[in-house]
Length: 346
Image (cartoon, rainbow, N blue to C red; front, top):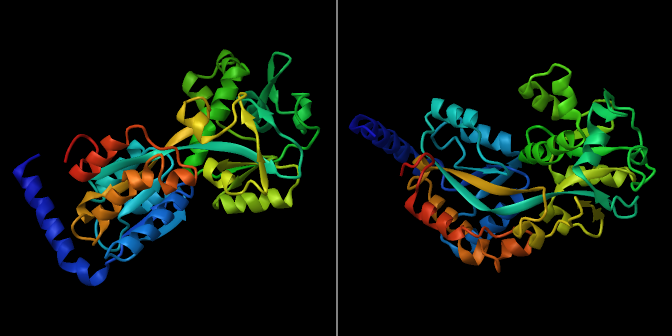
């Protein structure tokens, strides 16, 4: 790092410091609806145990939260972005273009995405990735050929599934959950059924086939939910045959309304996720704007509190709510303490 860059950063931080104290004294957080309940628990406990205001935590989805985060440095911009996926290169570039160059990545633990249905509805007790692909893809394999999806009921392609109309409420494209859903369920099903191989054999490039594998049907049987999991739950409540995609923690707090399906024969639990057995799990993150540390009161203290053993450890309140504790939590704690930024800087 050059002396000129250091000087410029120092000047920018000094200018930010001069206006911050009067402008804002609360940490501002936005992003993933999956991380939202964890962040809210920590924010409330932080406000009760520290001489700082309770942080303001908003939802909106991983992509939306990171977009806000990357809009710039200053009190009008958020300090932390919650995400149920890792930040993308294009988002890092967008951040840099707006002066957000030093970002601290914090992995808080792991979560699973689950398929659940109305408690009193049909028993979708066992899914494979191939089943979800066959239900929701616009083109599927039938008798060795890739054709427009003819299926209207789950039992049309798997007699072990209910004789019920296909209707799935899946996370919208701005949610980090959607990316995990696409990569670990839809794409895996596309490959397992031979659809990807058929696309390539039909003249598609491998890249185009990978993109095509992630598409979902648009005839009303697959419905994007742009809101949070409460909106998905409301849709399930109103449609007795439907399934929805949820985070494990949300399901575990709504077992009186929902029943969960296994995936590839494995039940989603904190134990199966921690053991790496459940195939649809993902790490959860938040991202800190380093330029705001020391300027926004309580920002670093909040981050350190979030990943403390007593909070994010296996016996902490987040684990009770469904977070699978990160086995490398100590390394995360050290990185937060050292303010280590992505890319190896500090």
